[in-house]
Image 1 (cartoon, rainbow, N blue to C red):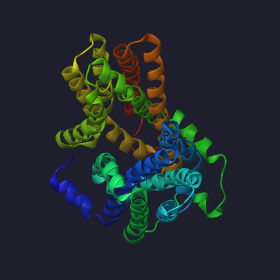
Image 2 (image 1 turned 180 degrees about the horizontal axis):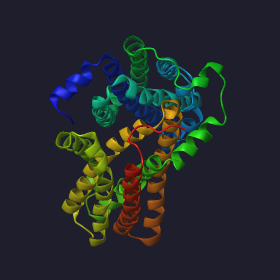
Image 3 (image 1 turned 30 degrees about the vertical axis):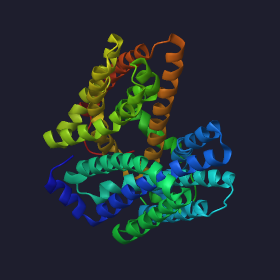
Length: 409
């Protein structure tokens, strides 16, 4: 991702190191818990439908809790938010790990744990600009993002083996322990800072807070264009959503896992190449638009019905170009006023999750209706290409007109 010296400098920062290690470890634990609960549901119910429903529950809570609870990261000191959230998650997952816990209760606890993750992640993301100096911020965001991607892949790869051999209770206990570790690391390593929102001393929920943050996101040209480019992920991930029928159409059902693994693996590689070759953050920001276009252009080539080799090549190119999300993420957070970062992150995360899930679901409906997986992927690429071009022009125009520093309200 970055040079060895840059990584040493980042890891040498005590605050960053604490959050980075804690986030990586808890991400692995979360994958263990998700797989463990899904397998537990299947063992007790023998129902594929209930198992699928349980897995889908890991996607929906952040869509609600992100916009509704993001204000917590602005109204209260962010270290306090992270520590309390981690302890609450540890306690709830610990209850899930107790033998004999009713299945319905475990599912309810899982939903609550996932909802609590929203203010934690909002506080963590909003803290990074304070924890890292300007010249290291983009590198820190890149290291955070790639580490989470790798941790998710490792966690999922290890989950099946661990749960099968040690049991779901052990996997859940490990996840609970990971949250304890996060709470302790953040408490000991991250400095206490006052709440970012000057009205935080009131300690009262503000129902208008999400509305004001949303207004900022849709009216500030740079934030709006960056969000538009990030939401293109809903189209870029269409091949992942159609991985099973795509592999079947290629007479290579065995390649489903490979197709699913390409996007996160190629993205990690793309971030590494981008940050190694382009060291200037301003130059990386200029590349956000072109890379967004490149992340969708290869999908148009599916209209030619590529074989497996070309399918993999096209998906690798698209996945590597998806590295633009990392500088877009850091630029977006840098532009935001500090008092709105928690709420804006919650809204942005929910919007991104919605675009990804909605894009894959809609692609499935379209592919079924027209009877062609490759035509659906090509269509998604074509639409995405037009939208990415428009967003690129808007981003370039907005950067030219505005001061590159954070805006004020």
